[in-house]
Image (cartoon, rainbow, N blue to C red; front, side, top):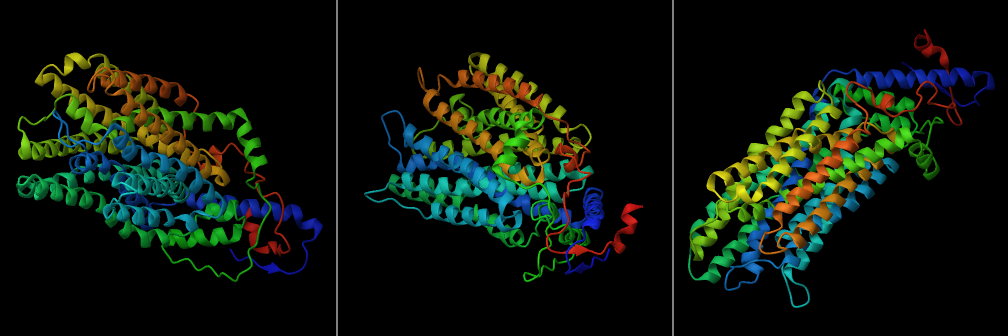
Length: 553
C-alpha cells in the first residue's frame, strides 16, 4: 500500500476518514503478524532469546555447586566438618542474584515500555557478561573478603538477568503468530532447563578433570586446585552470553511497539513486511516520525486500566502465581546440594582428600539427575501441549500435582530417608517436582504475563509479575538458610517441604484469576476496544486516502 503525506493541514471533514483508515491499516498489519507462517525470523527470535535464558539459568544455578567449592577453599573447618561457608556467607552468595534480579525485572520492564524493546535488548546481556567475568577473577583483601566481592557482583549480575525476563518474553510474544505463540515462548523459557543441565554438566567435567589434582597432597595444593575449579565453572557462563550478544543487538524493534507506543502505524507496517520476509530493516534516522493519537502510558492511565477489576485481577493472578511458584522452585533449586546431602543420597563413605573428591562428584551427579530427569522433559511436555490444551489448565494441573508431591515429601520425610529405597524414592519424587514445575507453572507463569497485557504495559506488567516471583525466591532462600538447621542439622527440611506444599495450594487459587490465552490475539487479551484504537489523525500532516479504498470495502 502506498501512502502519500502532504504538508497542508488536515481538513476537518477528513478526520473521520483518516481515523477509520488508520484503524483499518493497524488491524491489517496486526493480522499479518498474527496469521504469519513460522519462518526463519521466528526461529531467530526464539534462539536469540533462548540463549539468554540458557545463560541466566547457568549463572543462577551454577552457584548451587560453586558454593560447595567455595566452602572448601574459603570456609571454616571444625572437628566434624571440612570447609563450609558460614550460614550468612552461604545465604549472601545464594540470595544475591535473586535480589538483583528483582530490581532488574522492575527497572528493565519499565524501560522497555518507555524507550523500546530493541534499545534495551543486549544491554542486560552486557551487564551479565561483565559481572560474570568479574566473579571469575574476584579476589579478597583486608578490607573486603572474596565472599563479599562475589555478593556484590552477583547482585549486579542479577540486575542484568532480571532484565532478560520481560524483554525476551515481550519480544517473542509480539513477533509470534497467534497459533504458535505459546510454543515460541515455551521454547525460549525451556532454555532454562538446558542452562541448569549445563551447570551440572560443567561441574561434573571440572570435578573429573581435576580429580588427580584434588587427590594430591599436601592439602594446600588441593585447595588451590578447587579454587581454579569454581572460577572455571562460573566464568564459563560468559561464553554463551558473548555469542548471543551480537544477535540481540541486531534484533529489530517490534512492530507493536512502533505502532502502539511510538504511534507510527505506517513505519510499523513497513517493518512487519521486512521482518516476515527476513529482510534487513531500513530505518532512516533523519526521517520525520508520523505519529497518530492513541492511548499513551502514564501513571494516571496505568491506574485507570488496572483499577478495573477485570484487568487488575489478571495482574494480581500473574504476580501471586509467580510468587507462589518461585518460593518452592528456588527454595529447592538453590539448595538441591544441601537436600541431597541431608537425605544421605550419594554421601561419601570416605574421608580426607578422597572424601572431598567423592563429595563434589556425588553432588554433581545428583544435580545432573535432577536436571535431566525432571526439568527438561517437563519443559518439552509443556511445549507440545501449551497451544492445544491451554496455559490455564496446564498451570492449574501443575500446582495441584506439586501440592500433592510436596505434601508427600514433607509429611513422609522421616520414613523416606530411613532406607536406601526410601532415599531413591525421595529423589524420584524430587525429579517429579521438577517435571511438573516445567510442565506446569514454572513455564506458564512466564508465558501468560507476556500475553495478557496491552502493548504499552506489557513489559512493565511482566516485570512486576516476575519480580513478585523473585520476592518469593528471596523469602524462600532466607527461610531455608535460617530454618533448615532449626532443631539440629537439616532437621527443619521436612517442614520447609510442607510449607512449599502450602504455597503450591495458593497457586491453585491464584490461577483461577487468569484468563485462557490460547489462540487469542494480544489485542483481544488486552481487554481494550480495538475498533477505534487510533483516536485522531496524524499530527501536523495528513494522508491521501485514495490508496486505502480496499481497506474499507
